[in-house]
Image 1 (cartoon, rainbow, N blue to C red):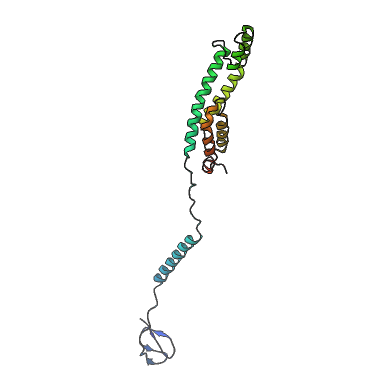
Image 2: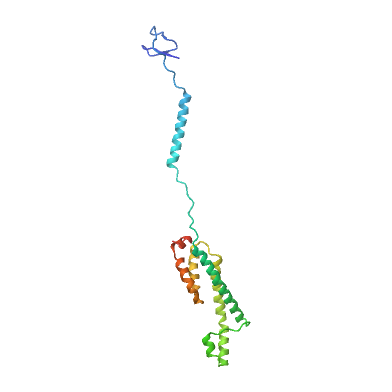
Length: 201
C-alpha cells in the first residue's frame, strides 16, 4: 500500500513525506491493476474480433446440386422401347430365316393377288422378296440396337434425350398402329421437366 504526498506528488510506503517533512493525511492510493487481468481481457477481445471476422468474411457454405426427380415419361419410354424391341427382334429372326431359306418369303396382299394365277411371275416375286430380306434384316438389326439402347441404357445425358426423340419417331414404323402411343409419349418427352432431367437447356 502506498501513500501519495499532496505537495510533491510522490508516493511513499508510509504516511510521512521525508522531503516535505509532513504527515500525509490523504487516503492511500489504490493499487495498480494486475497485469494478468488486462492480459486476459486483451485475449478475450482478440478472440471476439476473430469470431466476428469469421462470421462476416467467411464464404457461404456450398450446397449440393439439386437433382431433379425422374419424370414418369422416362419410365414409360423405356417400357415402350422394350415392347418395340421385341417386335424388331422377331422381325430380324423372320428375315434371317427367310434369307437362309428356312422360311418362304411373304408377299404383300397386292403382289400375291397379281401373281396368284401366274407361277412364273409368282416365282420371280418370291426370289426378289428373298433378296430384299437382306435389307429387312439390316433394318431390323438397327432397330433392335436403337430400341435396346433406349430400354436398357438411357443415361441422364443430353444425347440420351435426342436418342429418345429418334426412337419415339421411328417406333411408328413399320407398325403404324403404334402412332397412338407414340404421339402422347412424344409430347411429354418435349416437356421442360424431361429436358431438365437429361441436362438439356
